[in-house]
Amino acid sequence: MTLTEQILSQLPGDALSGLRRTDELWRSLREDQLPVSQVVHESDVLLETIDWDVIICGGTLGILSGAALAQKGWRVALLERGILQGREQEWNISRQELQVFVELKLLTEEELEKAIATQFNPVRVSFLGGSEVFAQDVLNNGIDPVFLLETLKQKFCNSGGKLFENTPFQEVTVHPNGVSIQKEFTARLMLDAMGHFSPIVRQARQGKKPDAVCLVVGSCATGFSDNNSGDLIVSFTPIQNQCQYFWEAFPARDGRTTYLFTYLDAEVDRISLETLFEEYFRLLPEYQNIELSQLQFKRALFGLFPCYRDSPLKPKWDRILPVGDSSGSQSPLSFGGFGAMVRHLKRLTEGIDEALETDILHRNGLAPLQPYQPNLTLTWLFQRAMSVGVDQKIEPNQINELLAIVFQEMQQLGDPVLKPFLQDVVQFNPLFQTLIKTGLSHPKLVLKIIPQVGVLALLDWIKHFVNLATYSALYPTGKALTPWTKNLLPIQQYYWNRWIQAWKYGSGRDYKK
Image: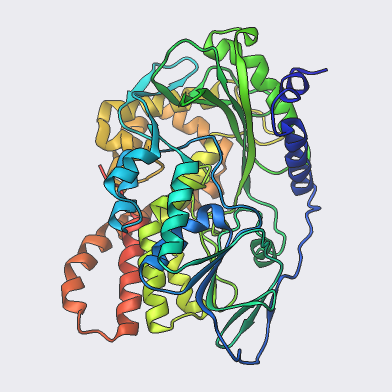
């Protein structure tokens, strides 16, 4: 019996079976065997009655948008395939990002403080052969999902929203004046919050394999020595199994959570999740300086996060808007999920509110709600530099060497450069400073990276880098002109506001210090 079988078989919730089900999903994805169901249909017939303004499918994170839209007075229904409730494992996020819940009147200040289950400082970044980098107040708050979702559920229902639990999505028909889900629920607009493997997304992408995947395994356990600091990204091994292993760790209410993750493509011969979990247990004692026998494991954590270059996903049908992980609005360096949803919550709430008000619900009108963001697209090259092709040969410590130097240079440039990047926000000036400093100090290392990532990928990256500079200039200009646009027609105002938001988020100017 392997260590993975031995440990996971003892955990509640049949963790080993869950891991193997997820591994089967990963195998099917690699072998291009995931079915593509035709769940979206179109009809020229008008709906006779429309019961809701918005129907959201996928409640775990859909409740965030649902509560915000219900708070604005819209008729909102939320369909959840099971019971809408949070898991035990905290969601990590930075404190300033949480203020959006107060701004949208979803939580009071007191409720927000209660939702924060853990706080820790500092967070560490470290790579084999390099020096350690520390930062304060970055992704250092653990949110209690059970309390947060229960509170938002109550706010949603008290604002007139209707929750339909144990109601899985099956199909939707798009009509000229609305959508009909399961021929039972009708609305003017549908939000798809069903995540990476949403059947609507599968149909929209026509079953295309992801361009990259992040595999994650880990656990929460007790038995560690007291440690109120976290690891944001740490690597202490060279390339193994054609993977560069990265680690993350942070305190939890009932122990300490540790993750092992890696970036790779979806080629058939890639490592399985169960094999990665075996690597996790093999290396965990060295990572945390503790024997496995000293630990009491509470729960296992695992998942796979696909990402596509064609992201965020543009609406493929009228009146259906993908949000959260369904849209792929996170960068390929991020796991997505809660953090990505919170980052775009205010932007999406304002945009959807205006779209409903002006009845701009056709696909071309909804497309600006998921705009091109050059700062996120730029991170594809970073992800490529942090991974190795399934048959590629590079020096065993090349990735560690690159990352150690880059983060060392960013630390020397200071928090205004380092901290946004650690929160998955790329801005032009910090990136430009880092590139110049690294290129001048370590030209040979930069040249070694070009064969790894490829010349075409580098040329494509330069295009998005120029666009980042353009967006960085357009946002303050557009913001200054906004007071002069108050007399625009509502439809014109809608599109102007979407441009401003695209420039703001696409240049990383949404980042809050």
